[in-house]
Image 1: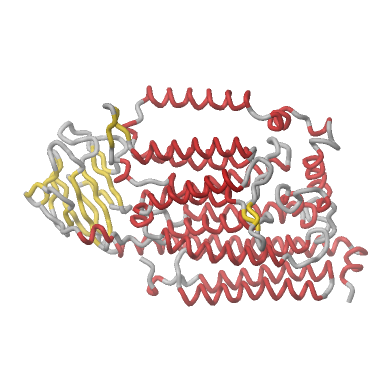
Image 2 (image 1 turned 90 degrees about the vertical axis):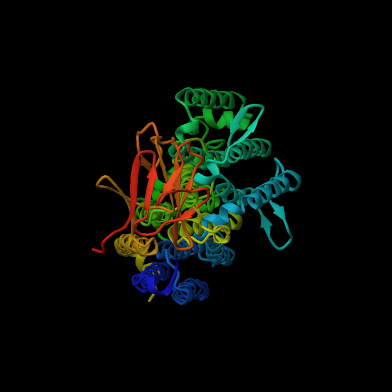
Length: 424
Length: 146
């Protein structure tokens, strides 16, 4: 479906706007720090990335320019934020991972743009899923979630997210393929999704990384919901009530059996223990208040001294230095990515599943991060896609953004169908 | 010129500069939204071209083929639903791949008949093909370009 004849005319204009938006932000950085080597490095890196990205996208003439444009804009903004927190120092590592995320987005687009092929490769996604689960089980644990490769540390649980989205998506044809064991009819794909969800829930419990669990549950929930939407045949009212009761029971059980640190977060009042368990949230809330509408100025924040200021409470750090307006604007820009599925609706059920899964992952992660920082929900320690520091999160988010692009510009070629002759 | 000390002396100007940046990036976001709207229209046109503008008609009612998988059946979750007893809950599936539309029988009791022949495997659809599903007769038509 992607062809040069349908090259979007608005693409150059959009990319020019990205370039100008980053330039405007850089002017503000220069106003705060003056002109020095670090500012020049930052400006050169961000503006060159925009320029090169624009040229590359023009040459390949890909579609779904909204996703590419928002991605370039957000990655540049994120690099500027991360470089300015608490004083200017070019965040080279963050920038490199941002570029890598953009490349990963294009790769995952190419891999998943054909929904028939992407679904045919589902056994490979299962293998990848269980390989990652094995890596988490064997190489990480409750103390550390990272694998140290020497030159780089990876968090395999982040890479499970895109693979899980690929598993959660399904098509009508797959849903109509039933198997029977001991007289019970079932759809193997649905059974595998439930099994994988249970595996990931158990793994998160074992790793004491329950913060990411809502993201996985949301992806699985959306996958199951889509199955309900287009195949309600198998879901009778009685079964739905039973499943609902089971879900409530599991939530109550999980609430009661949650580890001590989770219980503490669920029941603690941050204002009564401001220097203890509520320290991060109190400081995060104060930082938002002190920043006001327009912030203290880039590099003038104090929240940077608090742990996880670049990751788990990054929203508060942005609000403190750049102001609440900028913080909210950043959130809205990131939300543009999942909202892009509203612009060009997916043309296949598998791509719909992918797009809804990505939207669920992004929205839940942002909700957990921002609401956690604002003490509206217990603190979870989940990152904001593309904004928070963290290479694994950045790369995984890039892969997820590629799925959105695939849903917007699909290639509907089915090689297996080509082999069959139409017959009556 | 030392902007840092200037901004410390006159915080209003720093706020004004920040507001300018925010407004500018917001404007960029607005342009992205407008471009997204254009992309949607472009996507619809592209789909109409790619899918040859095919749609189904049955007794004067038009059924656009808006996705690569269109399910026909009695069940409420089918994309094209006919509440007839002769039609199975999930009767037929119309798919789009390799630039052509195909119809296949989903194991329906009464089968799917295309141009008078009961299909046993996926069958490519052409303009003016007549599809008989239960007592319903659907015709493949091409939408007129507007």
